[in-house]
Length: 299
Image (tube, rainbow, N blue to C red; front, side, top):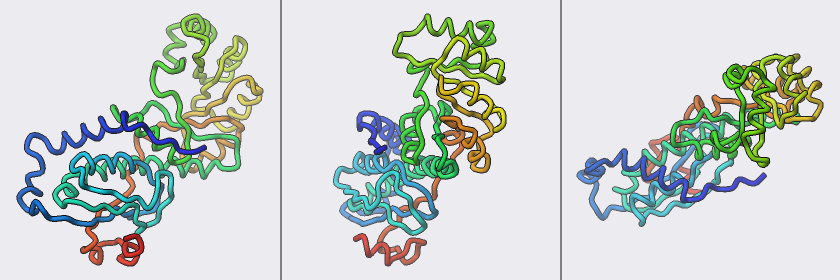
């Protein structure tokens, strides 16, 4: 599946908000006082550890919004794997603008690349099975569209985006409704025919109840691989099966081997470590971890 970029209409307000937070009412007073107005520089953005890239559109917008004269040339694309020293992009323009946008650009790029990287790790662990890895709604407030895009860049799939685009009946819904079957009946009566309905179950008895009435998908919560195999047999292809809970790069393979369709992982977005990516001035490259030879190759 090709990676479709997010529309600028979605990305730009997020980047603008981040820049406004950083520049405040007075702008970058350090660069304005230290760097001459007419000074121009060439810089490179380079990886300092292995991973998968995501967030280049947001990074490029950060530079362009600070100073339209800044030009960014990409050598890699979102979804590409990198190793330490790989040059991701070359950027040229007024030095003040480069320095003013640097942190915002790297914040987006490092955070989103971190999400793409851990997603790629789970995707690699379950390769060869029918399962796909999916994210959840456990996202940073305001950044959901970008974080879910980063999951796709890492080879994962998106679960529902919000409360409005699919029904997911959780344990508290079941408790209040008085049971799995009753919750499904109420959901089916309350939404249109185009809306998918998924129900979370904790036991095989609950799963059987859900299958007796019929549902589009079942979320098998915190089940062991043996329980998941039994659950897949009960469903027998009548619904999408989704495993959730206790998922790590170590346990993912056994979970996928149970035959489930999806493995949803909340920590892809809420706890992914930032990928170490740096911005270095070309003239200072010899003093950085970025190989001057690699820089020369892309200039």
